[in-house]
Length: 199
Ligand code: ATP
Ligand code: MG
Image 1 (cartoon, rainbow, N blue to C red):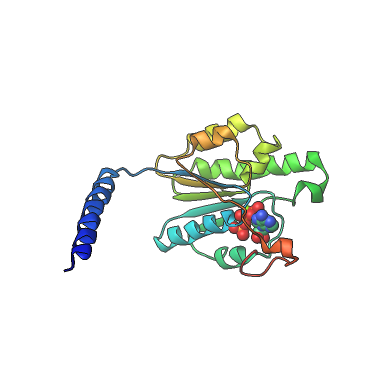
Image 2: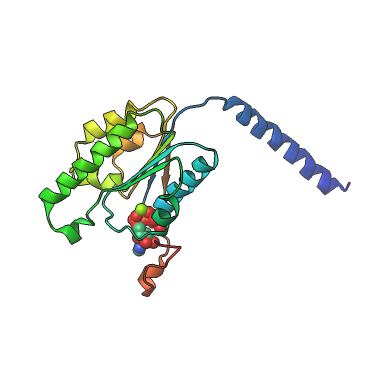
């Protein structure tokens, strides 16, 4: 072994010891609250990745899609027939499409009732509350109620919340938070939503 190679091996051995120690220290299991926020693309699709992972492990999953009214997405076509999965689309569309605040609030409350049932049901291992942040931002739902319902879910139940502009109290409650940064999006080059990528 050359001297350079030996130095590299020593550095890697040290690094491995540090990493192994950290892995050994992380020995807890817990139902996690994950928040995927930010203006970049990849929040909901990441949540659906965790749905796939969970189903692959034979876990039971619930998905509530707030805001969105479209039922022609690839994820719904693929997942909604899956065993162990309950999928609800509760939105009527974006606020600028519905243009009716009272209706938006009623729809939000109806959607939250579905989520509440799942959050109280320990047979669900993973819940995805897709685009929930908007209902809190626009105050369509009482943030105290929503956070309390999420916080008091079964101990081992994972919950993924997606949507832009997640509020401070939700971020504080979360165990894992990722902010997707909008560096570039093809839409700004005039490319419409592409099947498999955007829907
Ligand atoms: P995805 O569902 O693709 O993971 P997302 O959940 O991060 O996206 P949303 O804000 O829910 O993002 O928007 C969903 C749709 O809007 C997708 O078609 C996505 O490609 C598109 N989109 C997301 N971010 C941007 C952006 N910064 N500019 C333009 N379009 C975007
Ligand atoms: Mg989304």
